[in-house]
Length: 232
Length: 254
Image (cartoon, each protein chain N blue to C red):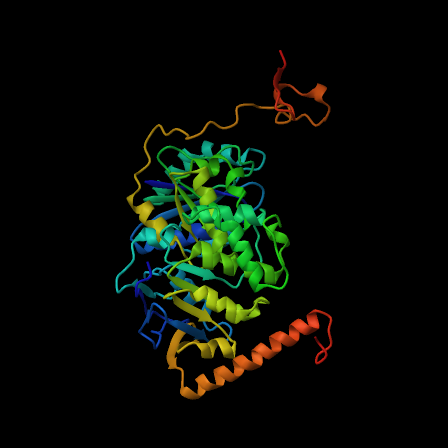
């Protein structure tokens, strides 16, 4: 089983890029399955089902969406196996940008929107810095100079990635991504994450709603970057 | 770098999935070719195919050859090796940066010196009535200023042997000067246009319809004569515009 993880900022075109890739891989004789993870609501299953492939949608609800994705990787891979697939395409919802659900042996794809401006690659963290491939979408909305500046910024943040100009609507970039997927390896047992997710559980996670500092426990960071531990 | 380079477009399919009538067109360095056709006829798609040096991997299934051969992958993607500079239809910048920082960054991506940034701004100011400076924020530039800056950027920073221009006439800049600047020495220039002067400045033009290249039109002698007359009229219009813009009355300027 090959395992491809799509992560990226909301509205960057992850679903469209994933769908283009699914079509291209099907043409090459692969049997893809798709799992889409979202937080609260999604209608993308309707879109995805038009591909005629096995599709599953999962909502993380009150769990951190990346944590949810990581926790369910085993189950997703097992499901794709039952569907007789040899390729699992997993779209994640990742929102807070502090972690990325990329495992060592997956193909980690970051989808990022060129119209979000050339400072964005510096803001998104491990989502981009630990990706193997960065798909840059919506380049047709800006000038060539702006696309090239954006690409430069992507390569500054992640010098070893393959940066590909993509368009989910026309399928641009899909062939290059498919070439990489085709030569990528299979998942192994005992997979590990590429990054450590954020290390603390805070009082808010445990249900606190009062705002004042005195009510909070755990490893806490102040605006001047001072970090302290409050608790027993 | 641009020693008699040739660009060949091998025909693909139109919007109905049928082979487009023009199966092949080759353009040589020094030539300016026009692309004409109604809205939605596929002009921008053709430009985009050339920009990415399509290899049967775009919806049109076209193939673009350089000097008769398929280009290497890095020539298609690495801005330092890119053969194509493009002035697209976009009239505004979205980047949250100032002009100087942006131009330096673009020069870096193209492997050019940062010193080109102020030169590019000076050149842009020769094309547009409203001057801009390196300290201006990109997103505050007017349509005309943005286009002038994009044009100057292509002439100095991108400086590639193939130049694609998508609808220069809507730009609010001096279009013939801009075209002259963009075409440089011995470059291959492809210009999408509805403007009679620009279209007739080209010796050949590709007519588009339903997403495909339907025919190649050679400019007639009559069209050539017409083009010079139109250019005279256009120059008159430009000077009248300046008179009005500067608050004078037509016919009484110094």
